[in-house]
Amino acid sequence: MIGVNAQSLPFARQVDYTKFAGFASRSSFLKDPVYTIETLIHRLLPKFAALQRAMMDARQQLLYGVLNDPSGEYAGYGNRSIAEPQATSEIATLLLRELALSVAFG
Figure 1 (cartoon, helix red, strand yellow):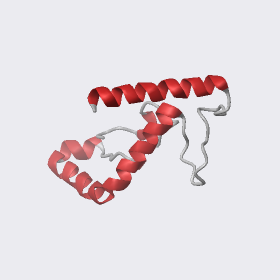
Figure 2: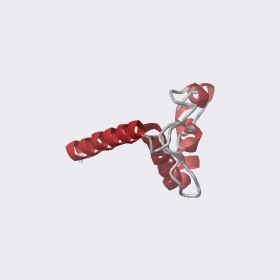
Figure 3: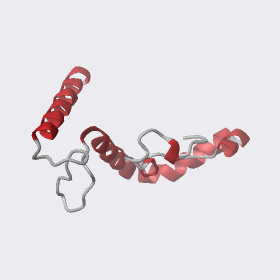
Figure 4: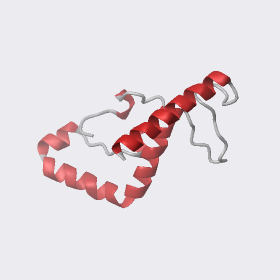
């Protein structure tokens, strides 16, 4: 992302964009756009698989409220427990919507 502050992006409180996106200053891009982009690609390419995993983790966090817990424990939906019927219903709705989109655009 050119000339963007990660903390100013939507959902920045929930998602750490620096884990899966590359950033370059606007001034360096304006000075030499080809070099800036090639340098960014060169720096990020070796970490491509980790960037993809981090993006999928961010997606789960935004869609389902699942926190990335190293213990493997389910961290709940948002600030609520999975045992609450309302939270379970919302998760089911999100999962069904996700399934419908994957079938439609499969």
